[in-house]
Image (cartoon, rainbow, N blue to C red; front, side, top):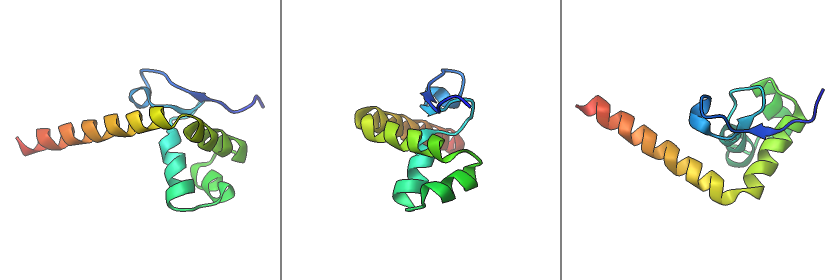
Length: 88
């Protein structure tokens, strides 16, 4: 198996950073590990990926805090726009 990596492609998850060959956002991994305080093992089992992939996502978030903050803001903006469309 090749080493896990984080990728961005415009056609998957609106270009958010994600685990390679998956549609799992690094933010999803981050929320389980940091916000819910799940272990890497629990998170890997829940998402059906390897622990090295979980470590890669967490490491990416820690190494790129400005990018992650921008992705979170863009996600909030998209959600607000969708909610506004529903209110029409």
